[in-house]
Image 1 (cartoon, rainbow, N blue to C red):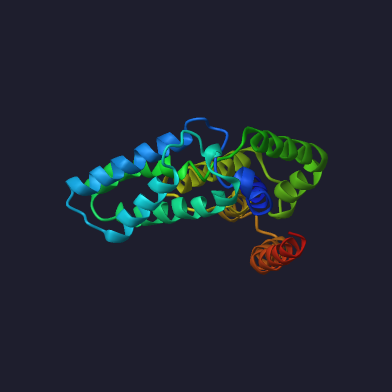
Image 2: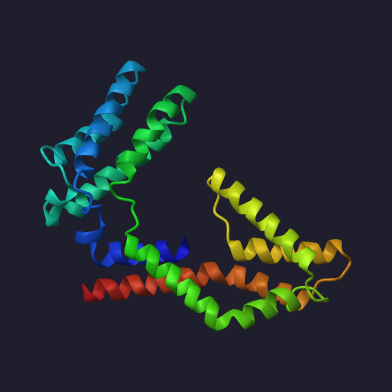
Length: 237
């Protein structure tokens, strides 16, 4: 997810004409328009007269009027239309929290509208999968040694590994269900440390300290790197 997200951020930032909206689906604009019309009908039936949402919906409808594909939107207006759609999606996200009935009616329509600007090209999925596979193939020894030998004071057993993986899978599944951001690396390493502590095997605090420091420094490092790339990108464009 992080790999695909980073690639899409770069593509949208440097090539918004091609990746700001899903221009490859031949019927995406039509589907988006129909979803917005249905949203307005839901609001009317629920006697909701939110002027801001209705105005934003009309703005998007006007931008997509008569268009079947988002590729028909002129290149110089695609970024502006993307912002209009995004603003509508955010507004609908707040609206769906009002009542369960509204949420049930709005949620699928919001997903249709949101898919106009949030999509992942197939080549990005394949590229990230290949990168992860090749990277793991090359650097697997370091991963295995760190996970199996350096977190606990004793070598990781098959039982501990199975328990840590089961806990990791369950945690990630729960995070997906509740839409919570988690890191598989963080969850797995914490699970292994938990099995070591429960088994009275002991934990190597030096390794844990390095992992914690890596977590702490990730945020400022990401901010600095992304800010630098943004400045460089603005200078080049």
